[in-house]
Length: 181
Image (cartoon, rainbow, N blue to C red; front, side):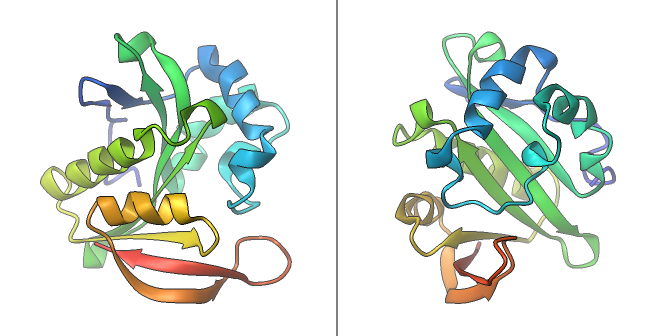
């Protein structure tokens, strides 16, 4: 990932901003991480759940985690750079030889259903295609998570496999939909 992102990007569309997390975001991140509603449809092996202290997560996010993925905070407000934390946007699974990457987005409870996820995914897609030379973007969603599926549909993703078995860390395979753009 460091080759694709030698510097951590800041994306801003005037309504939301995707940027690196700082220690100032720890309390909001901890609230999101502890939300059963947020994590109902997500894998158990996410980086923000790797360490019990979210401050340690943030300390390691742009060193240890950056080897495999780039996680940015999603923020809203009149001044997004000092705005309200709304979730995480992730780019992972980069395959340089075929110009492919996967994306995901997790939102805090207060941000669900407000179009923030749709905007965050659109911003990642734009960055990856326009600036990074990516040709294939994939995503996965649990089949029960219609809200995530709708975000992907709104952003031009096509469902390529329904109810595929994937390892999401739950002890048994998880049925997930696979998407491509």
